[in-house]
Image (tube, rainbow, N blue to C red; front, side, top):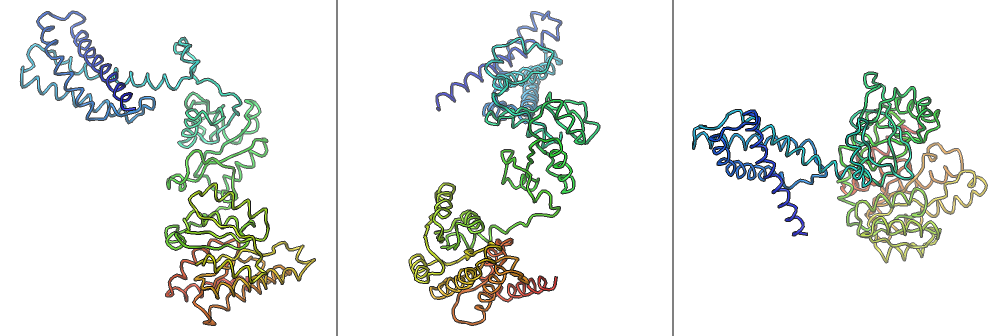
Length: 499
């Protein structure tokens, strides 16, 4: 690998040296109308080593030999301009002090600077063009002389994509699609509500019209999918764009918001389906992840009902913070196996322990807690199907109430530091058996904090706000914040009961 890099460096250095020497000679040819006087020719030849040495050193200092020229950018062009300008000034200064500029045409130095920038930058741009073209296009040299727009070879099985938004985001997505061969898309056009952009070209792709013309334009060009590339769009705008996509029959995707992009959490690869949060018209709650990680990181955590919809998502989120051990407790074999396999695949460094057990069996719970000594218990196991519980109410009592009491008692008995009950909004002014059973479970848990039977801290939270429970678990780590959390709980419950 070192030999390969060194070989490329020497090749590029030799080509640059030739181009620099040629630029100096051709600059003098232009200055003297292609008839250089013999006395000037000798002076020009004497200056070649000084020009080559100075420019090569300055080019190296400006990192012109560390770049990957297949990705030549504006930054590289600016470095070439600065390096050429500074090296020319150094050469002129040296010549002025040593020769007094006698026998040299002053205009030749300016022309030399322009030619050096043109040749060095053009050479690197040619390298990028070579790698940008597909293998078939490289063989078709006549395409470079074609007056029509130059495009890379098509991709087999590519879907025709229409991008809604011809701004910075749309332009970046187009470049990503062009550069990433694994993305099976071909951009057939842009749409933008800025009338001044309509009819113009973006990287050779036409801006066909406004988003209100989506249906007619998509049918005309045969688009197969639409991508909403407007990260700053409001919820009202997103709903309007989504309605137009549905009207035109196009599957639609969107890009993350600017906040997510700036945070560096996602890239263009994170293009996703339109989410409910894009249509809500309010900010998504941002978690204080560093503070959560400060507690859950390296902690032993047990999640009951780990195979369910709520419990499995809770397990995925907990694994992000690197617990020392995550115990999955569930009585359903298949869902438990699936979440265990998923976590081991997505988080290979995490220690995941699946336990097939029932919260109604106190001896099973006791063995699990004594074997692994969890510091935090998230209790998400419950029957949640409202119509089914109406038909079999005693099942809700045994599982949701007695089962919760079992987990609560075993957590207190085995010294669990924090117990979080994942409840439901149906427990507020319950109108069905399931909601009533969860409300009783809430009351059982909430009454534990004041009894003084153990050092375990208990808290309940609605499933739709289950991550509040993660944050609250950290809060309860500090006894000084216990009253604050209790007041928040009381205020929340009072507001729900009166609303």
